[in-house]
Length: 388
Ligand SMILES: *Cc1c(COP(=O)(O)O)cnc(C)c1O
Image (cartoon, rainbow, N blue to C red; front, side, top):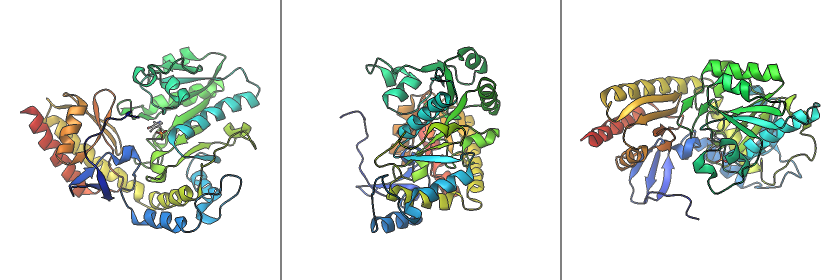
């Protein structure tokens, strides 16, 4: 179905932060498959993990357990050890992880004596995926138009506004669902006070705090998960994108308390957590959790952010603001973001559009100073071209 409008380029292979098209042209990839290729393209450790597992067994369904790094318990344990969570459910995509998180929230309230609590508070300009529930949770015109009636149960309030959150709570509220940094919505960073406030409100009213860290997680902001910056823990969290480094993989993480109702037979997936996905997920974690890796992300992110701030000062008629955290970055543009993105691509840099007329820059977490220099050079040249 023609649901995407794509440029007339065909990519043939990738290496690190670069993609090569069929004409042999090289592009610096600051789209990273929308924050998915966290370790760049063709990372040798990931290639090895996938190809070795491919020789053994691809799929056995969740009726049986796989062994070693192909099994779910090992990867789940590593995620549990590295986070707030006590338990994990593996999926194939972000929206499935998000749907699982919604079910965890409702089931928790049901099992703890509050079956009347089923509604979830969500935020304007949110994005949680494309299922009928996820578009109903975000309620953006461009997502829902023509797909109604919406799935009931989602109450939308302004992002960052704790007064509106409190006012929206009713005896039917089960949970609050938020992205620590809104990605699709325009790289809008939730303040640490806002996240801490949400935690406090959830504790006060007996609600669960459900985070969508599908885009912000797996080191993207310089911590394994973005909520760590605010020093608060969620009860339930949806993860995907970077967790598979390009292999389709998602996960719903939860505390033991929140997952109380997720007992035998209550949820399932045919493919979720299959041996290939687990092998790659383990390989991604090997790299991301290696000592010093996240510090390196934070350091290079600081360099890129400072250079982008300089760029905004130099080209105020083209770029007005740098947004974001870590390597989840946005440039608010004066020309339409699609115009800027096209020109950047013509000059060899791939980027992604976001709401609020923002150009999203999502480099792989493995970039160094050379890639930053090259990206800033292309951004500078593009801004000069657009100004003339
Ligand atoms: C990408 C994304 C999703 C949806 O993930 P899919 O894998 O496309 O289903 C949900 N929430 C956020 C914040 C995302 O960035």
